[in-house]
Image 1 (cartoon, rainbow, N blue to C red):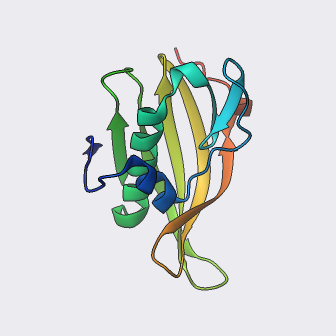
Image 2 (image 1 turned 30 degrees about the horizontal axis):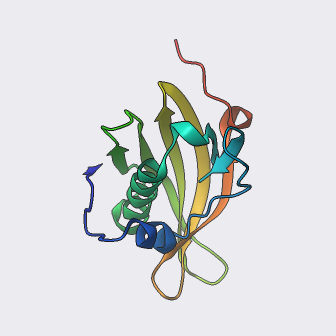
Length: 142
């Protein structure tokens, strides 16, 4: 299912906060940054991309079983991607958790990140470990 602007969420910041996806290691403009588990140039992965990316991931955590996928795209930038649930389990506190893989295409370059997320007592999902493949560099495809 594709994520369109405003699907069920009025405030883009609320989506990111709800998914508890945080920018990590923010650096000055022009330098690389880690953004929801992938390294992209600030100018090439904008606020709307991040919002759509986080919203698709959050919707996948909420509704998709193992094997299910949520897609996102931003026609303004051409960036797009998917979040696929690759497994389900319960953590030590018996909370539902999901393993996932994100494929994010930025400027026609594919970044793949594997991760886990667990449902919190308040119903939100917290992203735990993120493991960018290929050291966070684009994956070469033929």
